[in-house]
Length: 283
Image 1 (cartoon, rainbow, N blue to C red):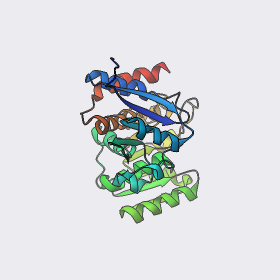
Image 2: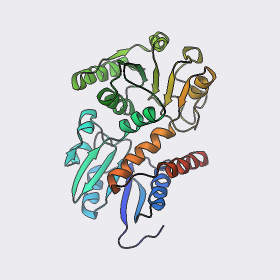
Image 3: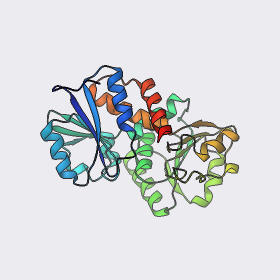
Protein backbone atom coordinates (compact mmCIF):
# COMPACT_ATOMS: atom_id res chain seq x y z
CA UNK A 1 0.00 0.00 0.00
CA UNK A 2 1.41 3.37 -1.07
CA UNK A 3 0.47 6.44 0.98
CA UNK A 4 1.07 9.94 -0.35
CA UNK A 5 -0.42 13.44 -0.33
CA UNK A 6 -3.38 12.28 -2.46
CA UNK A 7 -4.38 9.36 -0.23
CA UNK A 8 -8.02 9.44 0.88
CA UNK A 9 -8.82 8.47 4.45
CA UNK A 10 -11.72 6.39 5.77
CA UNK A 11 -12.06 5.67 9.46
CA UNK A 12 -13.82 3.64 12.13
CA UNK A 13 -15.20 5.53 15.12
CA UNK A 14 -16.49 3.89 18.29
CA UNK A 15 -15.44 2.94 21.78
CA UNK A 16 -13.80 0.47 22.02
CA UNK A 17 -12.41 -0.28 18.54
CA UNK A 18 -9.24 -2.22 19.37
CA UNK A 19 -10.95 -5.57 18.71
CA UNK A 20 -12.16 -4.62 15.22
CA UNK A 21 -11.03 -6.47 12.08
CA UNK A 22 -12.47 -3.74 9.83
CA UNK A 23 -9.06 -2.16 9.08
CA UNK A 24 -7.77 -5.47 7.69
CA UNK A 25 -10.92 -5.99 5.61
CA UNK A 26 -11.14 -2.48 4.14
CA UNK A 27 -7.41 -2.00 3.49
CA UNK A 28 -7.26 -5.35 1.69
CA UNK A 29 -10.13 -4.20 -0.54
CA UNK A 30 -8.46 -0.88 -1.36
CA UNK A 31 -5.21 -2.67 -2.13
CA UNK A 32 -6.93 -5.30 -4.30
CA UNK A 33 -8.35 -2.59 -6.58
CA UNK A 34 -5.27 -0.38 -6.45
CA UNK A 35 -7.17 2.52 -4.84
CA UNK A 36 -5.30 5.29 -3.07
CA UNK A 37 -7.26 4.94 0.17
CA UNK A 38 -6.37 3.96 3.71
CA UNK A 39 -8.61 2.92 6.62
CA UNK A 40 -7.79 3.51 10.30
CA UNK A 41 -9.62 2.89 13.58
CA UNK A 42 -10.08 5.64 16.18
CA UNK A 43 -11.50 5.23 19.70
CA UNK A 44 -13.91 8.17 20.01
CA UNK A 45 -15.55 9.49 23.16
CA UNK A 46 -16.18 13.09 22.02
CA UNK A 47 -18.45 12.43 19.06
CA UNK A 48 -19.33 16.00 18.10
CA UNK A 49 -15.67 16.96 17.80
CA UNK A 50 -14.94 13.81 15.79
CA UNK A 51 -17.64 14.72 13.25
CA UNK A 52 -16.23 18.25 12.97
CA UNK A 53 -12.86 16.65 12.27
CA UNK A 54 -14.29 14.44 9.51
CA UNK A 55 -15.83 17.46 7.84
CA UNK A 56 -12.86 19.78 8.40
CA UNK A 57 -10.17 17.31 7.30
CA UNK A 58 -12.10 16.03 4.30
CA UNK A 59 -12.14 12.44 5.54
CA UNK A 60 -14.04 10.50 2.87
CA UNK A 61 -16.14 8.31 5.14
CA UNK A 62 -16.55 6.60 8.48
CA UNK A 63 -17.78 3.32 9.87
CA UNK A 64 -19.74 3.90 13.08
CA UNK A 65 -19.92 1.33 15.84
CA UNK A 66 -21.03 1.07 19.48
CA UNK A 67 -21.92 3.35 21.27
CA UNK A 68 -22.45 6.02 18.58
CA UNK A 69 -24.90 4.51 16.07
CA UNK A 70 -27.89 6.45 17.38
CA UNK A 71 -26.24 9.44 19.06
CA UNK A 72 -24.47 10.42 15.82
CA UNK A 73 -27.70 11.31 14.02
CA UNK A 74 -28.11 14.93 15.28
CA UNK A 75 -24.63 15.79 13.96
CA UNK A 76 -25.28 14.63 10.39
CA UNK A 77 -26.62 16.77 7.54
CA UNK A 78 -28.76 14.11 5.90
CA UNK A 79 -30.02 10.55 6.43
CA UNK A 80 -30.71 7.83 3.91
CA UNK A 81 -34.39 6.81 4.03
CA UNK A 82 -33.71 3.37 5.51
CA UNK A 83 -31.36 4.78 8.16
CA UNK A 84 -34.10 7.29 9.02
CA UNK A 85 -36.63 4.49 9.55
CA UNK A 86 -34.18 2.40 11.57
CA UNK A 87 -33.04 5.33 13.69
CA UNK A 88 -29.41 4.24 13.61
CA UNK A 89 -26.37 4.85 11.40
CA UNK A 90 -23.31 2.66 10.84
CA UNK A 91 -21.85 4.50 7.82
CA UNK A 92 -21.06 8.14 7.06
CA UNK A 93 -20.27 9.49 3.60
CA UNK A 94 -18.59 12.88 3.35
CA UNK A 95 -19.98 14.39 0.13
CA UNK A 96 -17.96 17.61 -0.26
CA UNK A 97 -18.54 18.61 3.33
CA UNK A 98 -22.09 17.26 3.62
CA UNK A 99 -22.21 14.30 6.01
CA UNK A 100 -24.78 11.68 4.97
CA UNK A 101 -25.73 8.79 7.23
CA UNK A 102 -26.53 5.26 6.03
CA UNK A 103 -27.17 1.91 7.65
CA UNK A 104 -25.61 -1.05 5.83
CA UNK A 105 -26.14 -3.53 8.67
CA UNK A 106 -29.66 -4.49 7.64
CA UNK A 107 -28.82 -4.56 3.93
CA UNK A 108 -25.86 -6.84 4.59
CA UNK A 109 -28.02 -9.24 6.62
CA UNK A 110 -30.61 -9.26 3.85
CA UNK A 111 -27.92 -9.95 1.22
CA UNK A 112 -26.39 -12.67 3.41
CA UNK A 113 -29.72 -14.48 3.44
CA UNK A 114 -30.51 -13.99 -0.26
CA UNK A 115 -27.02 -14.90 -1.51
CA UNK A 116 -27.15 -18.11 0.52
CA UNK A 117 -30.42 -19.25 -1.02
CA UNK A 118 -32.96 -18.03 1.54
CA UNK A 119 -36.33 -17.05 0.08
CA UNK A 120 -38.13 -14.65 2.38
CA UNK A 121 -41.37 -14.21 0.44
CA UNK A 122 -44.23 -15.88 2.26
CA UNK A 123 -41.95 -17.31 4.97
CA UNK A 124 -42.07 -16.97 8.74
CA UNK A 125 -38.91 -15.37 10.15
CA UNK A 126 -37.96 -15.58 13.84
CA UNK A 127 -35.46 -12.99 15.12
CA UNK A 128 -33.73 -13.30 18.50
CA UNK A 129 -32.87 -9.99 20.13
CA UNK A 130 -34.38 -6.50 19.93
CA UNK A 131 -31.25 -4.35 20.23
CA UNK A 132 -29.47 -2.22 17.63
CA UNK A 133 -28.53 -5.07 15.29
CA UNK A 134 -32.06 -6.46 15.41
CA UNK A 135 -33.52 -3.02 14.59
CA UNK A 136 -31.40 -2.76 11.44
CA UNK A 137 -32.15 -6.31 10.33
CA UNK A 138 -35.88 -6.35 11.05
CA UNK A 139 -36.51 -2.98 9.43
CA UNK A 140 -34.67 -4.05 6.28
CA UNK A 141 -36.45 -7.41 6.12
CA UNK A 142 -39.78 -5.68 6.70
CA UNK A 143 -39.14 -3.17 3.90
CA UNK A 144 -37.43 -5.46 1.36
CA UNK A 145 -38.00 -9.06 2.36
CA UNK A 146 -41.79 -9.43 2.04
CA UNK A 147 -41.79 -12.15 4.68
CA UNK A 148 -45.15 -13.58 5.65
CA UNK A 149 -44.45 -12.75 9.28
CA UNK A 150 -41.57 -11.57 11.48
CA UNK A 151 -41.56 -12.67 15.12
CA UNK A 152 -39.19 -10.94 17.57
CA UNK A 153 -38.14 -12.48 20.88
CA UNK A 154 -35.96 -10.76 23.47
CA UNK A 155 -35.04 -11.36 27.10
CA UNK A 156 -36.56 -7.91 27.81
CA UNK A 157 -40.20 -8.29 26.77
CA UNK A 158 -40.90 -4.55 26.68
CA UNK A 159 -38.06 -4.01 24.22
CA UNK A 160 -39.32 -6.58 21.69
CA UNK A 161 -42.89 -5.25 22.04
CA UNK A 162 -41.72 -1.69 21.36
CA UNK A 163 -39.68 -2.72 18.30
CA UNK A 164 -42.51 -4.82 16.85
CA UNK A 165 -44.99 -1.97 17.27
CA UNK A 166 -42.62 0.51 15.64
CA UNK A 167 -42.04 -1.84 12.69
CA UNK A 168 -45.77 -2.23 12.09
CA UNK A 169 -46.34 1.53 12.28
CA UNK A 170 -43.44 2.49 10.01
CA UNK A 171 -43.48 -0.34 7.44
CA UNK A 172 -46.93 -1.92 7.55
CA UNK A 173 -45.33 -5.38 7.69
CA UNK A 174 -46.79 -8.22 9.76
CA UNK A 175 -44.59 -8.20 12.84
CA UNK A 176 -45.24 -9.32 16.41
CA UNK A 177 -43.27 -9.87 19.59
CA UNK A 178 -43.40 -13.09 21.58
CA UNK A 179 -42.22 -14.38 24.95
CA UNK A 180 -38.93 -16.28 25.07
CA UNK A 181 -40.66 -19.25 26.69
CA UNK A 182 -42.67 -19.66 23.47
CA UNK A 183 -39.54 -20.02 21.31
CA UNK A 184 -39.97 -23.75 20.70
CA UNK A 185 -43.53 -23.27 19.45
CA UNK A 186 -42.58 -20.31 17.24
CA UNK A 187 -39.73 -22.23 15.58
CA UNK A 188 -41.91 -25.20 14.63
CA UNK A 189 -43.40 -23.39 11.62
CA UNK A 190 -40.52 -20.98 11.01
CA UNK A 191 -38.34 -21.21 7.90
CA UNK A 192 -35.65 -18.70 8.90
CA UNK A 193 -34.03 -18.04 12.29
CA UNK A 194 -31.79 -15.01 12.81
CA UNK A 195 -29.76 -14.67 15.98
CA UNK A 196 -29.30 -10.91 16.36
CA UNK A 197 -28.34 -11.23 20.03
CA UNK A 198 -24.77 -11.49 21.43
CA UNK A 199 -25.41 -14.94 22.94
CA UNK A 200 -22.61 -17.32 21.93
CA UNK A 201 -20.05 -14.57 21.30
CA UNK A 202 -16.45 -14.96 22.49
CA UNK A 203 -15.57 -15.67 25.28
CA UNK A 204 -18.90 -17.40 26.12
CA UNK A 205 -18.37 -20.16 23.58
CA UNK A 206 -20.55 -22.72 25.38
CA UNK A 207 -23.72 -20.61 25.17
CA UNK A 208 -26.44 -21.00 22.55
CA UNK A 209 -29.60 -18.85 22.33
CA UNK A 210 -31.57 -21.91 21.18
CA UNK A 211 -31.50 -25.49 22.53
CA UNK A 212 -30.52 -28.08 19.94
CA UNK A 213 -33.86 -29.89 20.21
CA UNK A 214 -35.79 -26.78 19.06
CA UNK A 215 -34.04 -26.75 15.67
CA UNK A 216 -35.18 -28.73 12.63
CA UNK A 217 -34.05 -29.69 9.15
CA UNK A 218 -36.32 -27.27 7.30
CA UNK A 219 -34.79 -24.24 9.01
CA UNK A 220 -32.19 -21.75 7.75
CA UNK A 221 -30.16 -20.56 10.75
CA UNK A 222 -28.28 -17.26 10.44
CA UNK A 223 -26.11 -16.25 13.41
CA UNK A 224 -24.69 -12.72 13.11
CA UNK A 225 -22.07 -13.47 15.80
CA UNK A 226 -18.76 -13.77 13.93
CA UNK A 227 -16.38 -14.58 16.77
CA UNK A 228 -16.12 -17.56 17.11
CA UNK A 229 -16.22 -18.42 13.43
CA UNK A 230 -18.69 -21.27 14.12
CA UNK A 231 -20.92 -20.63 17.10
CA UNK A 232 -22.52 -23.36 19.18
CA UNK A 233 -25.88 -22.43 17.61
CA UNK A 234 -24.50 -23.10 14.11
CA UNK A 235 -22.97 -26.37 15.31
CA UNK A 236 -26.34 -27.47 16.71
CA UNK A 237 -28.11 -26.43 13.48
CA UNK A 238 -25.71 -28.45 11.30
CA UNK A 239 -26.19 -31.50 13.49
CA UNK A 240 -29.96 -31.21 13.00
CA UNK A 241 -29.56 -30.92 9.21
CA UNK A 242 -30.48 -27.23 8.98
CA UNK A 243 -28.78 -24.85 6.53
CA UNK A 244 -26.44 -22.40 8.28
CA UNK A 245 -25.11 -18.92 7.55
CA UNK A 246 -22.16 -17.63 9.60
CA UNK A 247 -21.69 -14.11 10.96
CA UNK A 248 -18.69 -13.46 8.67
CA UNK A 249 -21.26 -13.05 5.87
CA UNK A 250 -22.85 -9.99 7.46
CA UNK A 251 -19.54 -8.58 8.68
CA UNK A 252 -17.98 -8.60 5.22
CA UNK A 253 -21.08 -7.61 3.26
CA UNK A 254 -21.73 -4.55 5.42
CA UNK A 255 -18.11 -3.54 4.84
CA UNK A 256 -18.64 -4.14 1.12
CA UNK A 257 -21.63 -1.80 1.04
CA UNK A 258 -19.58 0.85 2.87
CA UNK A 259 -16.78 0.38 0.34
CA UNK A 260 -19.28 0.90 -2.49
CA UNK A 261 -20.57 4.14 -0.97
CA UNK A 262 -17.11 5.61 -0.38
CA UNK A 263 -15.44 4.60 -3.66
CA UNK A 264 -18.30 4.10 -6.14
CA UNK A 265 -16.60 0.80 -6.98
CA UNK A 266 -17.80 -2.79 -6.76
CA UNK A 267 -16.28 -4.30 -3.60
CA UNK A 268 -13.86 -7.24 -4.04
CA UNK A 269 -15.87 -9.47 -1.71
CA UNK A 270 -13.80 -12.60 -2.31
CA UNK A 271 -10.66 -10.87 -1.03
CA UNK A 272 -12.58 -9.27 1.84
CA UNK A 273 -13.95 -12.67 2.94
CA UNK A 274 -10.49 -14.27 2.84
CA UNK A 275 -8.87 -11.50 4.86
CA UNK A 276 -11.81 -11.30 7.27
CA UNK A 277 -11.57 -15.02 8.03
CA UNK A 278 -7.81 -14.81 8.63
CA UNK A 279 -8.20 -11.76 10.87
CA UNK A 280 -10.91 -13.36 13.01
CA UNK A 281 -9.05 -16.65 13.37
CA UNK A 282 -5.87 -14.75 14.24
CA UNK A 283 -7.49 -12.80 17.09
